[in-house]
Amino acid sequence: FATGDSAAGSPAERRIAAARQAVDLHPKRVDGWTDLALALARRARESGNPDFYEEAWRATERALALDAADLEARKLQVW
Image 1 (cartoon, rainbow, N blue to C red):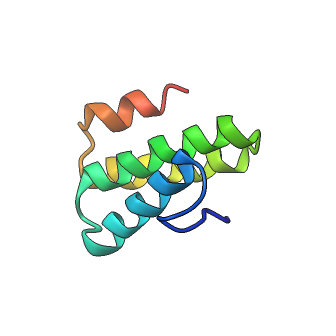
Image 2: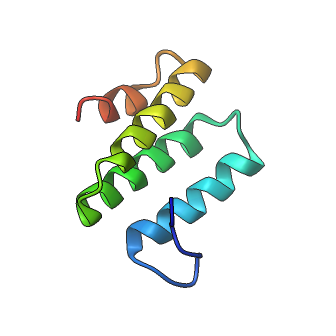
């Protein structure tokens, strides 16, 4: 997916870039995965591209694999 760099692009694209960097640095932190999922869902709405929802779902699955009780990841799966 084209997400732009942290200095350009839409607000959602910038958040995706920051979240990707966070999960690259700390892949076992649940909040990085939930941040990525939220940013991807915003990008899906912004762009009209449903593929971002699929990637967001996978990010929530990664978060729940780390902590099955994480409320934020569970809330994000509602959409």
